[in-house]
Image (cartoon, rainbow over all chains, first blue to last red; front, side):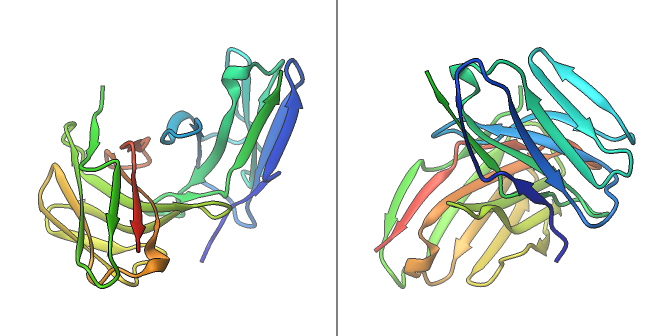
Length: 110
Length: 112
């Protein structure tokens, strides 16, 4: 089936360093969502991108949708311990169900 | 705020048992979903429902069935539990179109 590839699978950073996770698809996406799952918690919706080249910011988080709508990224500036968790991208392929990336697990070294 | 409630946080069952996982949402959402989450595999869709009594198979439906008799409730059924169904099960709901999904806290199911 159709899928989205997410890299890296794991990322360990020092507190204060930046972090980026990437989602890639071989097909053009109509939209993409990002979720965060804290350790022991459930995925929580962060944002949705729809337009080609779209960039959205939430405080230290910057979300981008590629010009060709085949990739997306989430960048965190100056990570804090509260950023710990697994970040998922998700998209639909023309129907109501979401296909999730495999996630990037972020750990912070204080 | 949307509330999605799963009946159990932790559950231990034996192989061969019939297992019911219940999920209730309070936002009148049309869509409801069941996922399982395993390390390194992300979230995999088992079944989803876009209306009462309607269901569609997801990516890994084998060994599972679902029931949606009322709009707010979506049940996942393991007909004859096996050890490879030990996992975290997450329920979610959303409105129609590409709306954000709201997840329950999950049920960690162990099959012995």
